[in-house]
Amino acid sequence: HQRTDIAAACFEFRDHIAVQFHNLDTSARLQHRQRDRTQAGSNLDQSLPGRHVPLEDRLAEPVDDDLLRISNKIKESEKSTAGEICVSIKEKKTFLTSSVYDLAKKEFYKLGVYKTRDKTGILIFILLEKKQFYILADEGINEIVPENTWDGIKDEMQRMFIKGNFCKGIIYGIDEIGSLLSKHFPIKPDDTNELSNKVALD
Image (tube, rainbow, N blue to C red; front, top):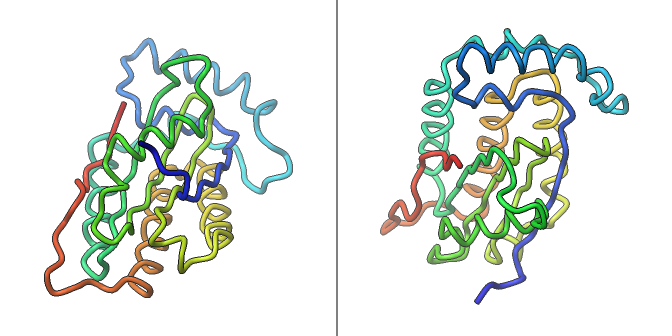
């Protein structure tokens, strides 16, 4: 049975920053590079600040290093809070009929974010295919933190994404969410790590 008391906020980023987390072979990189050069201008949301960053620059750092950096930031942020932070990155929709929100909500339950002792789990869900991300917080957080609290966090994440700083944007989000959770849900003496710190990839 799925609850409906989680908060969801969907935000789009309009640049080809997603591929930095793909395991691309040489031909695939060339295809993405060409697509990036020909489509980025039309796909970039002109209402949002930022500049187009060449795809080859965004692929400069190894994928594993970025994922490890994100996982370590989750671990670091959770040292001072009883809350649990999860990051899930999905390449594309499995079913054409599934909305991005539905996929994010499914991931919320699949990863067990709803199972934390005090209902203080939160998920950052990123769908690369649609260039969208969601922030979903459980009821324990929503009872204390206004839903519009996420607006400032998502705006800065979005700015970083548009500039091509995909990993940095995620880490910023984790850091800000961690600070928020530490303030409202400080770590307890008997606290345990209830959810994996590893980035969920699909």
